[in-house]
Image (cartoon, rainbow, N blue to C red; front, side):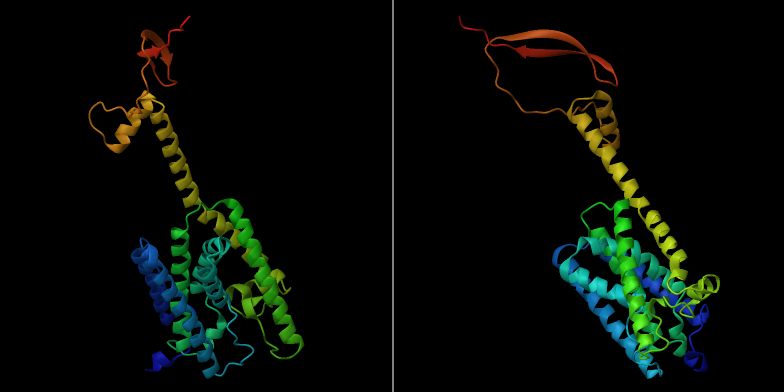
Length: 315
């Protein structure tokens, strides 16, 4: 009982247990729901978003119960904002914010599992706030990945830049909000998103030791986010290359390229000497003429007999 009531400690036993729970939850949801379609997919999405919103409220209430200041415990942490964006995506179906979820939400939410914010240390290791944070993280990650998998468009490197700019805008607004809260003394320790430096989490604390300028100290974090975005685009580049090659092969097959047909048969595990040809029949003129012609297909040279039909001119 004493261990259960102990305060949350970074990389403690409870932290590792909750981290595994969040990862297992995200993995299971993606595996189970990835092939859903139609109304089932929509229902599952709403269930996930609804649960995330409920967990944000529970985390906020838990922090207040633990003695936190109302203005300093507002649900404006990065994870909370990602939940609001998920809700917006679910309502509006915005493609740009679906991409934001993949390039920004997923990597930062995963990092947030390892480097949990310090405000969780004011609560018990298995308190409602800590449980809500890690369960919500798993749901946010799963939702962002699923929306990307269900997304019927290709992601490219330009999307990374657009998503990163949106993230910078969000961080800038949060920083201004922090400054206003401190200047008006409504919350003299306001530090949402860790833009004010100090001890928001282990990463911000370390960076602020080297760059003692609020917000500017997060420049290395921005660089990491950009780098992770380019890593996350690799699967889409590989898929696009494979898809383009398959399309090119089908075009060559349709044009009658023998080598392409052979490769196509091998890839499809076709047997025999089947050759895919256009079976459309054309009208036959009255006088056919046989012509033997030698052509080069680019891969092999073949002799083929072609029937050329020419109408006789009536003089």
